Image (cartoon, rainbow, N blue to C red; front, side, top):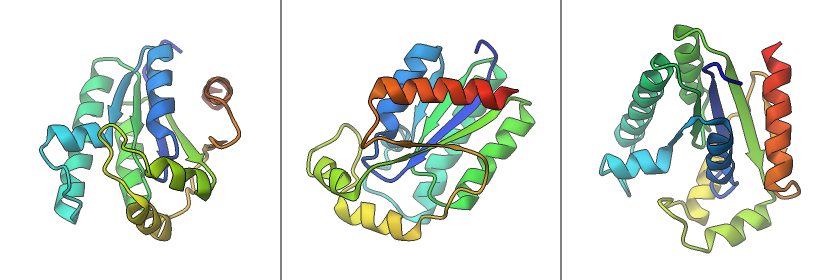
Length: 170
């Protein structure tokens, strides 16, 4: 996988999106863009209104576009819980004529609850945020890979992702 591509990793808070994205970015020599890190860089921690969310997504899209323009592989992790938030990414892939891939990570709710009790780097999500996003979640309609981070190891998820990328490329 030496050619540029755009891979989105979606899921509820504490599902393991960043954990997988960082590992894949290292393994595949890809640029990793994380919504929590972008929010922090923009000085928008604690701000989750519509304008703040849009600013974060716009900055992520801009960074991804620059990386794709430079011929890089790009992995983006965020909740991507609304269809309209996903649409712009598909358009970005089309604009840069690169393959577009989507992964949804799921975990048991009890595991999410346990993870959300611990402080996590850059993420401000708590149980209340988890419940809100879960309630507003719009199912993915486009082809994608679903991974269960509650039962699969990091290596198993990595292998499944690599197989998915090769299979979908054909």
